[in-house]
Image (cartoon, helix red, strand yellow):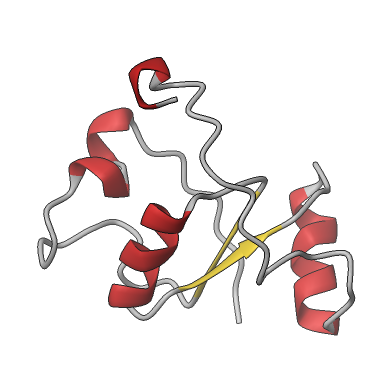
Length: 90
């Protein structure tokens, strides 16, 4: 198992990628983020990627928590889209 930090431009986001088109995350098994809405979760699911939400800000701690199965992760809770980048969607 390996951990990669992938910083994608907006044009490389799942929101901007058509269903079925190749994406930079296609080889990932898990995506750990500070928040994610149901749209992204559905897109990850369609690609076979597990979406996990963490309240922590430390990526190493979040990966360790995921691997240990600790309850600090909220992988089944949808926090919804806060739409900071897309105020027209709020």
